[in-house]
Each structure stands twice: as structure tokens, then as C-alpha cells.
Length: 364
Image 1 (cartoon, rainbow, N blue to C red):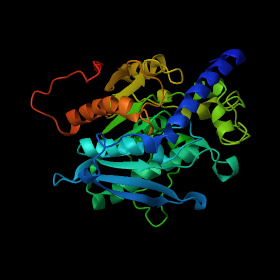
Image 2: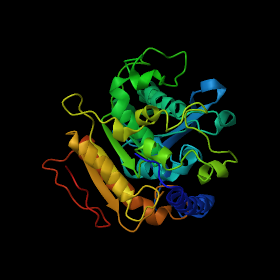
Image 3: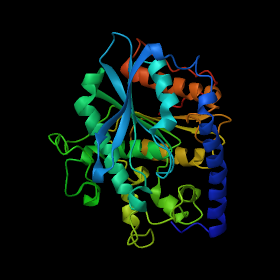
Image 4: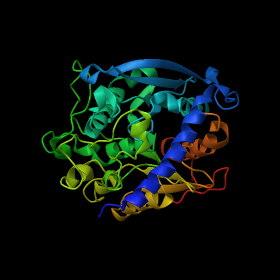
């Protein structure tokens, strides 16, 4: 793919800046949002700021929400936040985690991971992917103590978080191949005292991918690593290569393909992926419906199972905590719950229905 002309790339990141500015403003208003009708703390218990790993001495934490019913052990949702791998932490998904814990029968693990700008702007995208894999391994080993069922795992995330979830889905089964997995660049972040299952194949049973960044190769060609990407500027850092100064998309495109879920979808005859739900806002200028449909098309062409849902009238980041959460997120989260319940809590003769907004999901 040829690099995008500079004017077009700058236009893309101007749109991204507008969405980012709005998202930051909404997040600042989080305490003002009326959550009473959306999250009911009496319906769940929460364990906050659990340190699950400390790669290079940086403590990574997660929050675990467990429903207050006697129906466990529950399927487990491992959630990764968005922010272009450059901003935010798990708190941006707090309201989504609370809503799911209040309105569904799942344990929710809201995960933090390293950002590119951490450690003096030296973290590489492969480090972040290592964190995502490590978090799921930690959940598999320890979630039983929090009422979760390690044999029923779901990965989810929005934007950059959806990229991490999709990477786990498309590459997790290869992780036992320690020398060839991901070109030998991946090694999951995990406490050194618990390495017994570190490199076992990592299988999950479902994935929900909200407005995901599925093609890192394309992002780099469009200027993600350049100065005009506002995420770098927000963090007070200069744009740089995702894999360090010595790797660039022109000379090393395979590195970028390796971390792009859309380029790593196995054919069903080689490996069966879990069912996936891919969602996007109809007005999203950052991750367009066309981009998500392209991923869905590639998954279907490989014979894998995927559903698509388009949130009419919504833009990017509609799951983020903030003052618009009440008007935007519940519809999308209810749709997510419906998709997952059909897998983990199926009813006899389950039939597809439309969600409350009138946006029906499209099955294979």
C-alpha cells in the first residue's frame, strides 16, 4: 500500500483531534454523570488496583467486578481500554465495567497496560501486546478466586483496546511456538513466580471488538508515527516508530503486518476462531464503518464466525466514561450482552432480535 498523501493524512488526524478533544472533555465530567440508573453497586463487588505484573518495574493493575448472585462461577470478560496506545488507563472504561457487572452475569476484568510514551517514550507496540497476552494468562490462573470461570473467557476493548483483543483472538493459538510466534518478538508479560502456563496456547471463547484498529500497517502509512498525530502531542512527546528508531514501515512492513489482526486471520481449515462481534459508530471519522466492515469481510472470507453492528448516529469512543455515557453506552452494551448471552447462556430456539435502537446485528 502506498503512503497516504500528507494532506489527506493531516486531515485524518485533524478529525482525530476533534474526537479526542471531545473525549477528554467528557471524561473530565465523569463525576457529573448520573449513574444511579445505570450502575448499581449493590449488584456487584469490586476489587480495585490489583497488580498483576510489573514489566521493567512498572506496576500494571486491573479492577475485577463480580456479580452479587449465587449463579457463579461466571464467564469472564477481559477488557482493554482505548486511546491509540498512547493515552488513558483502565479508568476510562470504569462505567462500562460497572454497567456490565450490574446488568449481566459476567466477571469483568478491566485491565491497564503500558503505553508507548511510558519509560521515557521507549515502549514498543510489541510490549503492549505482551501486556495484553500476560493479562489474559493472569486471569486464567487467578480468576477462580473472584468467582470467574477460566474456561469461559471473552476479550473485548475499544479502538486500540479492540486491536489488543483482536490480536489475542487471531494469534493466541500460536503462542506455544516460542521461537516463531509473532516473528519471535512476543513474550507475554507475566509475574516471574508464575510461569507454568506462560507459553501454552491461549484460547478464548468469544470477542467483542468496538471500533477496532485492525490494520497497524495502514495506520503507519497514514502517519500514525508522525508529529501530527495528536495523541503524541497530548502526552508531550514527539512521534516515533512503533518499534523504535531503527524500524520503519517503508523498510520493515512485515513488522507492522505481524501486529495487524486483519493480516493474521487463519483460515477455518487451519484453526477455528471464537465468535466475534465487531461494532462501530455510523459517524466515526477515526475508525470508519468501512474499515470495520473490511475486517469483518476478511474474517468471513476465512470461514470464521463474526457479526457486525453499526451504532447509528454515533461517533468514536461511545463506551468511554463521561457525561455522555448514559445516552450512548447502554444501547451498545446491551447489544454486547445479547451477543454474549446467546453464546454463554443460550435459550432454547434462540432467535436473533434487534436491540433497543433498532440496529440489528448482521450474522454470517
